[in-house]
Image 1 (cartoon, one colour):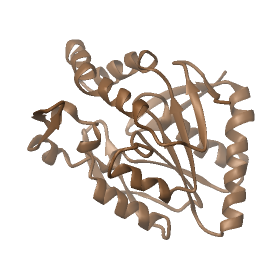
Image 2: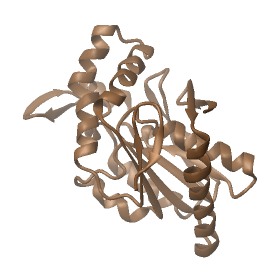
Image 3: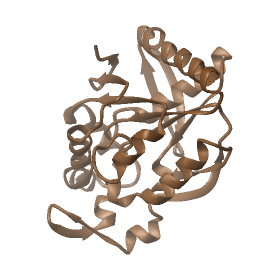
Image 4: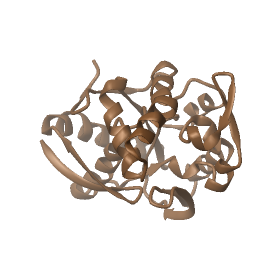
Length: 244
């Protein structure tokens, strides 16, 4: 296993990957994307979609890191977390869940807590030009605008809902040049989600309640309503492998 440490939304996150996964899955994908850029003569967008806590942010960071180490065409990892509604909006709005209106704060992270229109607008722009991308600060629990300068020819865009088979999200599929989906099960990500919430300041019972009322439902929603991806990876809670 090879170990890495990445800065993910203001937190240092450790990740490890089997060398066979890197050599047989990750690097061939990188080579494929380089060839796509050469053929298309413009920036390409790769969607990396997965349920919460399945490791999409760290995998995207791995692609970026290896592109620098390998000296090929630069890959830049971007996330859709910067398109959460602003915290002031979330604190003052409600959303319907299972036929009941609840505070958006209590289910933050669900598709409805994202600014879809703003996300789609910037996604359309980033395909054609260098722009500045928003960032989600997990320390402040809020969005920061125009933080990340986008410049690379290959963008790996990670997010929970990039391949969600629900309106309006399913319209996004035509905007990517390649796509990856990480499939898993709720048991493999439950502990990580609860620990993440506690790391953000929640008490243990609050973190468990948030998982049951929000994160856990988002996991099941993503797994049950996903569009086909060009590549599917399987995450068992520790390692990744490519689906046959």
